[in-house]
Image (cartoon, rainbow, N blue to C red; front, side, top):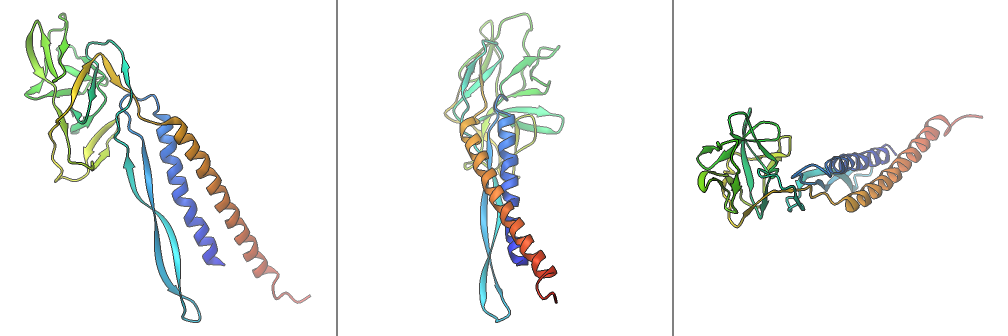
Length: 244
């Protein structure tokens, strides 16, 4: 009976964690470059022994891994000259206060010195360092990532990629870092930059909403099972064997 309470409660834990992932996805449905995530849940089998020394299997559901869906989000036209969309694989490289990070969010601007930065002021890396332009002159960004002013190359956006399947972790603000130190960046192949566009969130709202409803019903079923086990245990303790 105690085992039944334990099993029901352990089944509810990954459901709550999956709900948290879905809630985070839906909260970022309008976040530029956001990648939706989910959970892999695995059943662990433990073989125990009862009073008769007969083995039986105990199933324990646990979160095995958090995965990120790296599929491209929709391309949205902004016509802003420094907004960039990566068509294909790869990440922009930026220098944050904590070091190098990677992102698909190409919502760029200029700082007072004319250096290309992210929307929150972090410097965008070029192949040969930071990219500085003249603030008063128009900027053209080619499909190869070259930043031009008056037909002169001011720098080339550094777009990198990693070995697939990706082993990256989120580090806030839609940015990623390698999960393992032995997963070095490499030159991205097969990409093109679209100036004046941004990549939208790849969150599938309908699919996430349907999944949220299904998880809620599963959680409710486990909750009822837990409550039934608790009531049975209470009767066993307080009523069984009572002398009238």
